[in-house]
Amino acid sequence: MSAYLTEETSTQTVNARMDTSADPRLRRVMGALVEHLHAFIKDVELTEEEWGVAIDFLTKTGQICGDTRQEFVLLSDVLGVSMLVDAINHRFEQGATPTTVFGPFHVEGAPERAMGACISADGKGEICLFEGRVTDLDGNPVEGACLDVWSDNADGFYDVQQPGIQPQWNNRGIFRTGPDGRYAFRGIRPISYPIPDDGPVGKMLAALGRHPWRPAHMHFLVSAPGFRRVITHTFVAGDPYLTSDAVFGVKDALIVDFERVETASEIWRAPFDFILQRA
Image (cartoon, rainbow, N blue to C red; front, side):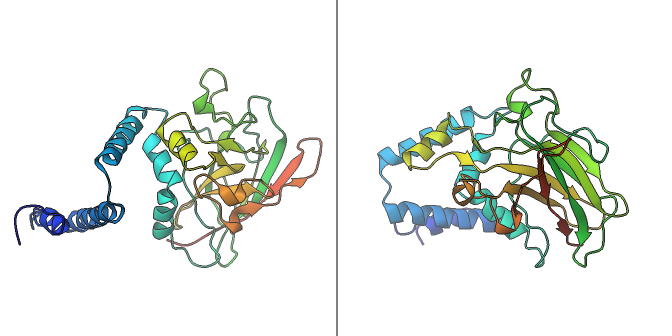
């Protein structure tokens, strides 16, 4: 084989340059990346102008990233890559609560709150009681399960998107189950919101005729000793964006009927049981 790259031998020529002493997993991943990337370029017969647009897009995507914004994660999300990686890495047993995308707005160190406490601190939105059980696949309660929860506010923004406007830790909290495996907390009935669309990813979506909206959801990170961690959402049944979520995060098993109750302490109730698979 020639040491020089040609259209016909491009994949083999590039991959042959990798030394056999390189990490085997790295060689496999990079070899496959080169193979598929070159095949894509040949399939669409990419023009020099289009390649220039691609380089400019990636450059601008990197330039807009910062401490509070990760445009490359957003790009991964809207291309379905995040959900595909999630699906491959979380092949749970049937009956276990499915996972979905983590999202960019989780914050470490949220306050641990008493069971039943309210996580909404800005006084906006319709209060909702989120409650249910954490069990194993056999229906046994899981004691000491940690539920890290977070959501947008009634204006469709997370607290980290509006520092100085929303109270710190607004719509966030950590709860731990007792012997009965039950959890309960009050938040707001979440609303649909658009992902940040003022950057390169948003412009790409617009060019493709795609909208940037996510259906209303509450985030959960559920963990317990001896069990596999679950990162997931619960989605509001009937939301108009369930079948067109911009980041492809919806699964049937995660759609919840929010019940209107209008008691003295809340307007809505969202029952949902988490079923964990043993590690």
